[in-house]
Image (tube, rainbow, N blue to C red):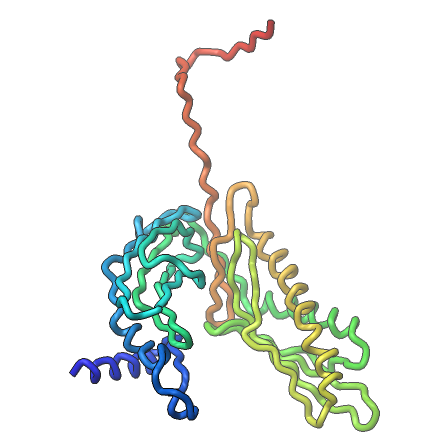
Length: 298
């Protein structure tokens, strides 16, 4: 019965979109069937979590929470535990600062090519004191077009045939750029498709590519595509990052507020902007209300 439940566990992880990945059995590869790879799924299944908590589990903007965990790994397993992509001890604690209104922290078990979540916990940010600012696609599209125009002007051998298509959904910001390639012979058309996701780092908008893909109507040499598109992708991203941050910063009082997060919705980007907490200064020498400070230098 236990082996059946393990099989179901592994199948459920795969069906639910877990990051569980495992190698082909050694006998399928013509090798030795004995070894640690074969018991890795069992090790992940048999690993138990005695404790995983976040204190507190609701924090104010920019405040930290303490994650505390205790994981029991079978003695015959070489399983490692990871938190936020870094290896940690099976038992420990760590202070983290939630970066979004809703945050999920996962303890991940890894053994060779097998990996999967062994525990998750959620932490919320209290945004009652925060404001939301909407940036519609009608505002974002000309910003992106300016970025693409700059790329077009600085890159010989290609030119735009029309303005780009720009749309925003929950999956991110999608862009299609329509180009002609100036090469000997018929000039092929090229559609450069991009999709961006948005994260924030210390109050700064940090866009990332979900994909970046040029598609030509006819064959183009690989080295030409590499030099004209893929080698220029970081330049496009950096220019767009600067432009977006300039727009968002116009809605923020740098002395009083800070950007917490960005979320893409249908045809808009929603920014959550929160007040910066003031440090509390305690004096060991309380003065009466009518007292004055006197500096006496002798």
